[in-house]
Length: 221
View 1 (tube, rainbow, N blue to C red):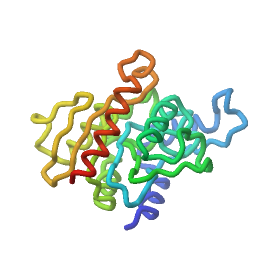
View 2 (cartoon, rainbow, N blue to C red):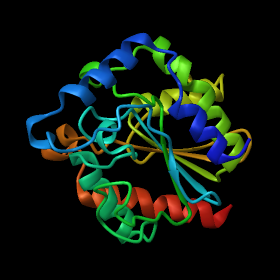
View 3 (cartoon, rainbow, N blue to C red):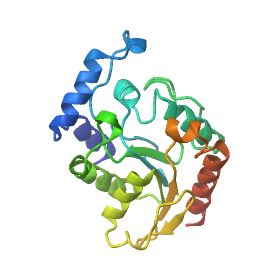
């Protein structure tokens, strides 16, 4: 299976009744600021460079961000913090991500998520994340990245679930990096959520260091 076929399968998924109901309700009711927008309202596939050496794994689409625009980290505060950093590090051709047709191109990077549907309160259940797990496993097989950057603890735990047996050895901490059994590198970062960035738990300087490290690990392996 290639990435296009894989992503088409993601978009068609209806495995989680709670998430299907929520994402479609949000797309139908809409937020007042986006009343004239046509919401995506479906599972959000990954996107980026099919030859990427760096795979970025987030949490799940935001109700009025990716669930509206149909592209990872697009149309919300997290994306407004992420893409300037990726542009500065040379992974993106522009610092903004506003819509699927805005011309954004990722270089040497592919962005995906632990969960593909917008969850209520931004909290997918363990069962819902388990339903999405095969999609993440398949992306790792297709892309064969050298570096996996986990944005947040849940993404970190999802990757460890794939590489079972490491949970007691690897601990989540911003900037921590671990070499997995297959030679891939696992790099941890706080999630660029508005809560983390507004409180300065994650600063631009801290985030820039993550992408410099990702580039270094990719070049060394």
